[in-house]
Image (cartoon, rainbow, N blue to C red; front, side):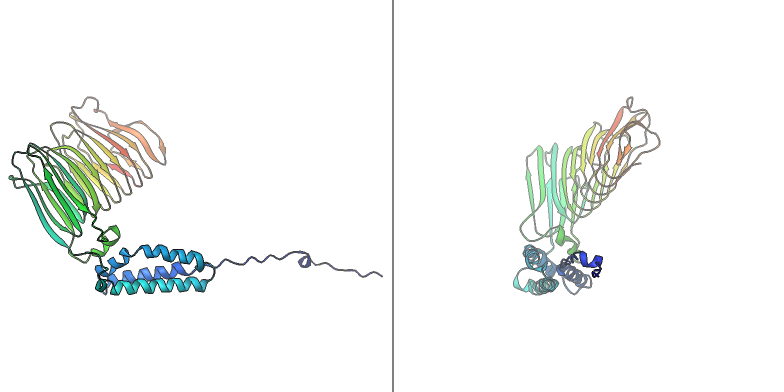
Length: 351
């Protein structure tokens, strides 16, 4: 009698046990360290000077990431060790760095600049890279063309040229002090940073404003505006646009943050708005026999909201909304406002 051999499925199958890849503990430990430094700053145990040391030495992070990729993925213990050493090194440098001269120049300085009106018949004004709250408005001093009062860190440059056609430039410069968007938030407990700029309402002006970090309030309602170009940075921005005898062009390129634009009654202008990240709201005048409004919108991620008296001429709904809207009196209106909107992330609200 032949023996009957029983075959079990488990005996005939190759059991492939895949080793789970090691997960490095480097990043969890680093995140704990970052949170610890943030907490120490919030409770006042370390200053902005200490934090600035960390940001000046940020290239060390790339070096440590390289070590983690080479060795940390082979063993959780190695990744944990790299993370712990990294946190201790950065905390140590953060604490002793100011004494070693590694801290950025975070001293808040004050300065004032003035330009007499003189024989100026026109002006081109450039404001570039303000770090802190930026305010621009009409001056109450009829003898000056330009006034600026600053609380700032780092370095600023002020230049002026021309007699009748005046050119004025005020800009934040990079002096390798380590001041940047990343260190700006750590200055919250220091003296507030600000640019307060006053412009003569008696001279036609072309304005070129490049935002930095911080909120901006541009009250241009009493300025003789010939043209406006704004590149916003990071922070909320409010813009009041004037009504001039002649139509003018205004371009606003959004960065990160909400933008609120208000157009004066009886204004006539071509407004180009390029959205970044954040809601854009535009307050328009009431439409009547003399003022008509046309909107051309190419929305990114976000909706377009218009008043009830805007009729849609073209476009359809998709991701965002693209189309053309007009008030019924646009073609016959003496004062025309055209708005060309290219959206980013965030909606457009015409109200």
